[in-house]
Image (cartoon, rainbow, N blue to C red; front, side):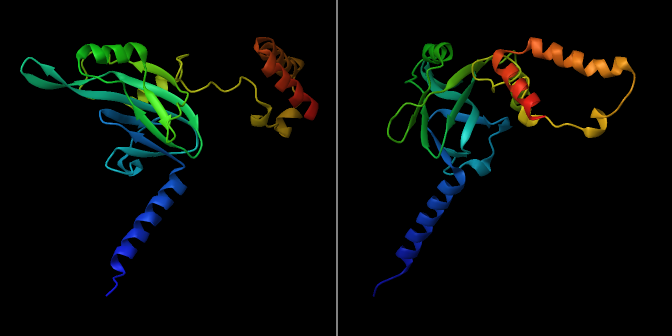
Amino acid sequence: MFSLKPLKTTLFLVTYLYSSFIFAENILNLSDGVNLIAVNGKEAENGGFINNKSAYALPNGTNQIVINYTAEIKNGSEYELEYSNAFVLLFEQQDKTLFLSAPKINKIKDIKALENSGAWILTDNNGQEINYKVSLIKNSGFQLSRDYERELEDFNKTDAAAALPKPSLFDSKNVTINPAKANNNNTSAKENMPAKMLMFWYNQADKKTRNSFKEFIKKH
């Protein structure tokens, strides 16, 4: 007699995988040895992993991840676990299945070579290489644990390659005018201060920001 149980199981798996891709938007698959530590400023949570911590759901758009590599290295007659320093990777993708791996690592010098080159391998499901920016975060001294969220906050204030892009100094889309303040008639000194400040920041801005400033003035 025909059984519906296998069919139900198949439908369940298909539905689960389909819904995962719908809501995950990007799926990042990690090869052996690659550890995902943080995603977009937060420590990687178990709820984001899809398959035993080898695949992780990422949103569409720009993603910043922190990773390191663990290798079992032979030391004399025994094998010991060795860890690379942490890396920050910055990339932008939409609705992709991604694969992240490292070059072959058998010795301590291979880990050092990875730290010097940052040559991680990030591809899509067609084997096409994905562009990314990478920076190394070194462990400063002995630490029982690390606060990667705080480290990322400090890291993103730097000009490192994989730091999040700095917002434009002046963006007219993010500016609102307060009529009450605009119509506040105080002394001439106070009235002149906003104009002086505007001129100061205008002179400090680059060409793109100055054009944004001009467009803002025209609209108001």
